Length: 416
Image (cartoon, rainbow, N blue to C red):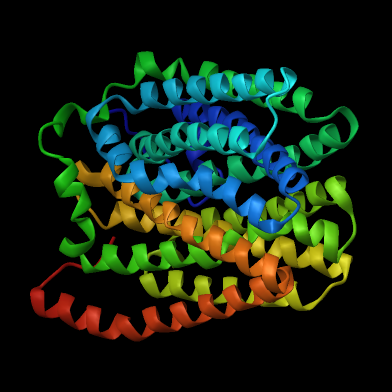
């Protein structure tokens, strides 16, 4: 396994490692494609179905593979070369988006086509992200892992800024077909950039194949209380925090009255905030090792969601969308890093599979948010979810003293 130290206290330390730069650039293009695809297909779903529930169904189709295949994807990342997994997954996403584009040209328009496309794209994205996150840890080493994961997620946010503006404008000006074609090309370019790592990065599974099984990966939560708490926060954030993506088209159309281009600006503002949040995490990695810090982030997430829902002023909404992006991105990066730090080396891929499974639980949140948004309006649905996030954070905070006491009695070492 190639592993180098990037410790130096700087925000961009991990990018000094050449192999990590290739992975980072690949992730940048793959994330551009991912955001562009979500924007186009969610907007088409709203146009076809006419309600937030239609958007929720399509986005749920993208999340379902995370629930079904998250843990198996983690085992896959512990058994096979992670660089090759990332490459193949990118190619698969490119092919699926290309087929959806061709189908749309041929007149195959309808919600079932969007759902089928999202299911397949979500499957490949789940496999890619699981392997890439564990691979980032491989390339920089344990001491720099949080920095590397934050920078990897930063690539996603930078891509979100670009795709929100570019894809939103392209959708409004040229339509869905050209925008989907660019999306397919971006996925393919991401696979080309990670290709050099298949020659220099040996299988991370070389020393652990045969030890990690699907059954063992599935019992991580019951075997490790710290993992259980982290997973609880991540799952809660996915169900009641990140599910606000279902409501963004409705906020753009019905609350702010700004249409498809405005939706792109809202998503870009969220990505700008995510970028700033990840820069803070990358610079202050030592502050994010405790589960309590993750719980505080979750509470702040809920507060930001409530504020966005309560203030129907576009300028304020853009600022709050940035705040939601910043806090959400921090929860995402810190959760990934804490899960990998909480398990042995042999199970880091499986830990990321558990993280992906928790993301899959967001399926329930997408459907719940879409249904409530359709019945009671987007502001009410988002405000309710924000309140639930705060309650979940308080529950985790209340459980921490008992968990710490058990660790001390058992003689467990402090988390690194």
